Amino acid sequence: MKKTEIKAIVFDVGGVIFLIKNKKKRQTKNLLTSYKEFCFLLKGINIPREEFWEKTLELFKKSSGGEVTKKQNLKILSETLQTTPKKVEHLFDKTLKDNIIENKKIIKIISRLKNKGYKLGILSNQSVLSNDILIPKKIINLFDASIISCIDKVKKPSPEAFKLILKKLKSKPKKSIFIDDKQNNVDAAEKLGIKGIFFQNNKQLIRDLKKFGVKI
View (cartoon, rainbow, N blue to C red):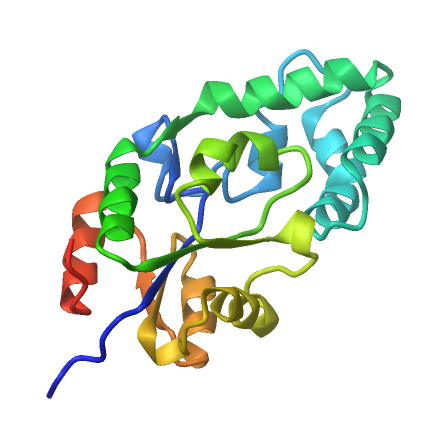
Protein backbone atom coordinates (compact mmCIF):
# COMPACT_ATOMS: atom_id res chain seq x y z
CA MET A 1 0.00 0.00 0.00
CA LYS A 2 1.40 3.38 -1.03
CA LYS A 3 2.16 5.77 1.82
CA THR A 4 0.40 9.12 1.88
CA GLU A 5 2.85 11.84 0.95
CA ILE A 6 3.59 14.04 3.96
CA LYS A 7 3.36 17.77 3.37
CA ALA A 8 3.51 19.30 6.85
CA ILE A 9 5.21 18.45 10.15
CA VAL A 10 4.16 20.17 13.40
CA PHE A 11 6.35 20.25 16.50
CA ASP A 12 5.68 20.79 20.17
CA VAL A 13 8.39 22.85 21.90
CA GLY A 14 8.84 22.00 25.60
CA GLY A 15 10.05 18.40 25.86
CA VAL A 16 10.92 18.22 22.14
CA ILE A 17 12.86 21.27 20.94
CA PHE A 18 13.89 22.17 24.48
CA LEU A 19 14.68 19.42 26.98
CA ILE A 20 15.25 19.16 30.71
CA LYS A 21 18.99 19.14 31.49
CA ASN A 22 18.49 16.29 33.96
CA LYS A 23 18.03 13.29 31.64
CA LYS A 24 16.44 11.20 34.42
CA LYS A 25 13.61 13.75 34.64
CA ARG A 26 12.74 13.76 30.94
CA GLN A 27 10.30 10.85 31.11
CA THR A 28 8.68 12.04 34.36
CA LYS A 29 6.91 15.19 35.50
CA ASN A 30 9.24 18.17 35.18
CA LEU A 31 9.14 21.94 34.89
CA LEU A 32 8.33 21.71 31.17
CA THR A 33 5.27 19.53 31.75
CA SER A 34 4.09 20.58 35.21
CA TYR A 35 3.65 24.07 36.67
CA LYS A 36 3.87 22.54 40.15
CA GLU A 37 7.31 21.09 39.37
CA PHE A 38 8.39 24.50 38.09
CA CYS A 39 7.22 26.19 41.31
CA PHE A 40 9.17 23.72 43.42
CA LEU A 41 12.38 24.75 41.64
CA LEU A 42 11.98 28.44 42.45
CA LYS A 43 14.74 29.66 44.75
CA GLY A 44 14.64 32.40 47.37
CA ILE A 45 10.88 32.99 47.50
CA ASN A 46 9.43 34.11 50.82
CA ILE A 47 6.50 31.69 51.04
CA PRO A 48 6.37 27.86 50.90
CA ARG A 49 6.56 26.66 47.31
CA GLU A 50 3.41 24.57 47.55
CA GLU A 51 1.51 27.58 48.86
CA PHE A 52 2.85 29.69 45.99
CA TRP A 53 1.77 27.02 43.49
CA GLU A 54 -1.74 26.86 44.96
CA LYS A 55 -2.12 30.65 44.97
CA THR A 56 -0.90 31.11 41.39
CA LEU A 57 -2.18 28.01 39.54
CA GLU A 58 -5.29 29.73 38.18
CA LEU A 59 -3.16 32.69 37.10
CA PHE A 60 -0.85 30.30 35.26
CA LYS A 61 -3.82 28.76 33.44
CA LYS A 62 -5.05 32.21 32.41
CA SER A 63 -1.53 33.19 31.36
CA SER A 64 -1.27 30.09 29.16
CA GLY A 65 -4.61 30.89 27.57
CA GLY A 66 -3.72 34.48 26.78
CA GLU A 67 -6.26 35.86 29.28
CA VAL A 68 -3.69 38.07 31.03
CA THR A 69 -0.78 40.06 29.67
CA LYS A 70 2.82 39.61 30.73
CA LYS A 71 2.69 42.91 32.62
CA GLN A 72 -0.48 41.89 34.48
CA ASN A 73 0.97 38.48 35.28
CA LEU A 74 4.18 39.91 36.72
CA LYS A 75 2.25 42.46 38.79
CA ILE A 76 0.08 39.79 40.44
CA LEU A 77 3.06 37.50 41.07
CA SER A 78 5.09 40.35 42.55
CA GLU A 79 2.25 41.13 44.97
CA THR A 80 2.09 37.46 45.99
CA LEU A 81 5.84 37.36 46.62
CA GLN A 82 6.04 40.92 48.02
CA THR A 83 8.74 41.95 45.57
CA THR A 84 9.05 43.82 42.25
CA PRO A 85 7.80 42.64 38.84
CA LYS A 86 11.38 42.90 37.52
CA LYS A 87 12.67 40.54 40.21
CA VAL A 88 9.87 38.08 39.51
CA GLU A 89 10.68 38.08 35.80
CA HIS A 90 14.37 37.46 36.56
CA LEU A 91 13.47 34.63 38.94
CA PHE A 92 11.20 32.89 36.42
CA ASP A 93 13.68 33.38 33.55
CA LYS A 94 16.59 32.04 35.58
CA THR A 95 14.63 29.00 36.79
CA LEU A 96 13.84 28.05 33.20
CA LYS A 97 17.29 28.77 31.77
CA ASP A 98 19.08 26.90 34.56
CA ASN A 99 17.09 23.73 33.95
CA ILE A 100 16.60 23.43 30.19
CA ILE A 101 18.80 22.76 27.19
CA GLU A 102 18.24 23.23 23.46
CA ASN A 103 17.85 19.95 21.58
CA LYS A 104 20.51 20.68 18.97
CA LYS A 105 19.93 17.41 17.11
CA ILE A 106 16.27 18.30 16.61
CA ILE A 107 17.23 21.77 15.38
CA LYS A 108 19.43 20.14 12.72
CA ILE A 109 16.59 17.79 11.73
CA ILE A 110 14.18 20.73 11.45
CA SER A 111 16.63 22.60 9.22
CA ARG A 112 17.01 19.55 6.95
CA LEU A 113 13.25 19.08 6.72
CA LYS A 114 12.82 22.73 5.79
CA ASN A 115 15.47 22.42 3.07
CA LYS A 116 13.62 19.40 1.66
CA GLY A 117 10.46 21.46 1.25
CA TYR A 118 8.27 20.29 4.12
CA LYS A 119 5.96 22.86 5.67
CA LEU A 120 6.88 23.18 9.35
CA GLY A 121 4.78 24.40 12.24
CA ILE A 122 4.91 24.95 15.99
CA LEU A 123 1.94 24.05 18.18
CA SER A 124 2.74 24.88 21.79
CA ASN A 125 1.04 25.64 25.09
CA GLN A 126 3.06 28.49 26.64
CA SER A 127 2.52 31.04 29.38
CA VAL A 128 3.32 34.70 28.77
CA LEU A 129 6.40 34.26 30.98
CA SER A 130 7.89 31.21 29.24
CA ASN A 131 7.15 32.08 25.63
CA ASP A 132 10.13 34.36 24.93
CA ILE A 133 12.60 31.86 26.39
CA LEU A 134 11.24 28.63 24.90
CA ILE A 135 10.24 30.11 21.54
CA PRO A 136 12.84 32.79 20.73
CA LYS A 137 13.06 34.39 17.28
CA LYS A 138 15.85 32.05 16.15
CA ILE A 139 13.46 29.12 16.71
CA ILE A 140 10.39 30.80 15.22
CA ASN A 141 12.38 31.66 12.08
CA LEU A 142 12.85 27.95 11.32
CA PHE A 143 9.10 27.47 10.94
CA ASP A 144 6.45 28.49 8.43
CA ALA A 145 3.69 29.00 11.00
CA SER A 146 2.91 28.75 14.69
CA ILE A 147 0.02 28.50 17.10
CA ILE A 148 1.10 29.46 20.62
CA SER A 149 -1.55 29.30 23.34
CA CYS A 150 -0.74 32.57 25.12
CA ILE A 151 -0.83 34.45 21.80
CA ASP A 152 -3.52 32.64 19.84
CA LYS A 153 -5.73 31.86 22.86
CA VAL A 154 -6.23 28.21 22.03
CA LYS A 155 -4.63 25.23 23.78
CA LYS A 156 -3.80 21.64 23.00
CA PRO A 157 -5.47 19.19 23.10
CA SER A 158 -8.38 21.27 21.77
CA PRO A 159 -9.25 20.19 18.20
CA GLU A 160 -9.34 23.88 17.25
CA ALA A 161 -5.61 24.22 17.97
CA PHE A 162 -4.74 21.47 15.49
CA LYS A 163 -7.15 22.76 12.87
CA LEU A 164 -5.69 26.27 13.11
CA ILE A 165 -2.08 25.21 12.60
CA LEU A 166 -2.99 23.01 9.63
CA LYS A 167 -4.98 25.88 8.14
CA LYS A 168 -1.92 28.12 8.41
CA LEU A 169 0.26 25.44 6.82
CA LYS A 170 -2.38 24.73 4.14
CA SER A 171 -2.16 21.02 4.79
CA LYS A 172 -4.76 18.27 5.24
CA PRO A 173 -4.70 16.06 8.36
CA LYS A 174 -3.76 12.91 6.44
CA LYS A 175 -0.75 14.69 4.95
CA SER A 176 0.42 16.05 8.30
CA ILE A 177 2.45 14.78 11.26
CA PHE A 178 2.28 16.07 14.82
CA ILE A 179 5.13 15.49 17.32
CA ASP A 180 4.63 15.90 21.07
CA ASP A 181 6.00 14.49 24.34
CA LYS A 182 2.50 14.18 25.85
CA GLN A 183 0.49 11.17 24.77
CA ASN A 184 -2.88 12.88 25.27
CA ASN A 185 -1.92 15.57 22.75
CA VAL A 186 -0.79 12.95 20.24
CA ASP A 187 -4.06 11.07 20.74
CA ALA A 188 -6.05 14.27 20.13
CA ALA A 189 -4.21 14.86 16.86
CA GLU A 190 -4.78 11.29 15.70
CA LYS A 191 -8.52 11.58 16.34
CA LEU A 192 -8.55 14.29 13.67
CA GLY A 193 -6.72 12.08 11.18
CA ILE A 194 -3.28 13.60 11.78
CA LYS A 195 -0.37 11.18 12.03
CA GLY A 196 1.00 11.36 15.56
CA ILE A 197 4.44 10.72 17.00
CA PHE A 198 4.94 10.46 20.75
CA PHE A 199 8.42 11.92 21.26
CA GLN A 200 10.77 10.02 23.57
CA ASN A 201 14.20 10.66 22.09
CA ASN A 202 15.88 11.81 18.89
CA LYS A 203 16.68 8.37 17.44
CA GLN A 204 13.14 7.18 17.98
CA LEU A 205 11.77 10.32 16.30
CA ILE A 206 13.93 9.81 13.22
CA ARG A 207 12.77 6.17 12.96
CA ASP A 208 9.12 7.16 13.27
CA LEU A 209 9.41 9.97 10.72
CA LYS A 210 10.96 7.54 8.24
CA LYS A 211 8.11 5.08 8.86
CA PHE A 212 5.75 7.77 7.57
CA GLY A 213 7.91 8.21 4.48
CA VAL A 214 9.56 11.45 5.57
CA LYS A 215 12.91 12.06 3.91
CA ILE A 216 15.53 13.33 6.35
